[in-house]
Image 1 (tube, rainbow, N blue to C red):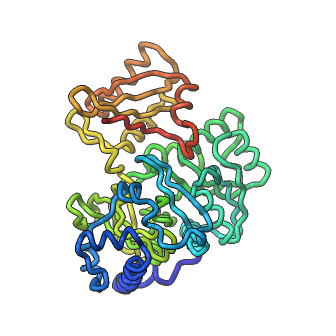
Image 2 (cartoon, rainbow, N blue to C red; image 1 turned 180 degrees about the vertical axis):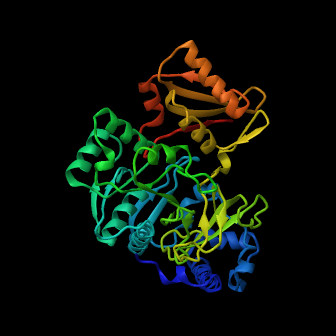
Length: 430
């Protein structure tokens, strides 16, 4: 298993390496970035005088709104150097264009190569990709190129269609699947219905994307348990975003996504932009290293996580991120309770009587948050309604509004036109 040397170095050596790379990036941005030139000037930052990470932390962070509003001003190269145009998913507003140069594409391949290595991948594996590789989706392209760099085999099956997924598993015998955990649950259900013995198949591992499979203490959550209690496969969780062009991937210890210090400088900040302690919740704030086209400096992702810095059993000395607790802009204040969508997803995934769901949040006439759960139940009856609502009251202490819907309607909500992944949270607040 390949581990970059920097990840095995003492924490002091990692910090020294990162400090040097961050200072190099500052010089690059000072020379080539229209946005950061004006940002430094606006905030009175003499970038050439910043010589340490302590001084660097005084530069005000940049938000997603800044990136949306000034998208092209972040570009540091002539458009003739752009090899690939990708976009963010647009979950929190207008999608952002992230252009990549040839050098950025090579960096992206390296990122996924070391990520798959982290998840115990080898050149003898065969990966089945259950996700889109089109629609300007960076992740699909990154996974594919990372697997090719690893020297492993790859099946580009695409998202959905359980019958086609199982046909490929049975014919080509992949060792690893890459997909959304809730879809893996659907694969299991299809296999049961069609008498496929999942534990006699070639699949031994799953790289899980897009949804949490663990709680913050790294135990498996409801979704993770639903998979492993039926399918004897090893799960590896990942966390990434298009903007950071980097992934945090679990090793076999399953104790958080490993940071790759040669690719990213990461901070977890509170509401006052101060660093939080290990185990405390903070907003993931990233500085990309080695990005040529559209590098980002102190960019607040909106994702709330915890981090841990004790040495992992795999030998890496790098920071490890918890599952995403929630997105800052998606925080719900409901009748005195603070909730994040992942907590609601976990609760709904645990409901045997609910086949699928979409969580909608909107503002009531008082301007406070209301929750409407769109549920596709196993059956519609008064008894089922009572059962579902008493479960919600027991778990949440309050009952959100519930609307029962058909499979067709819930699928339409989950997969709107041009969606690259299932939509399970709709924010219609003012």
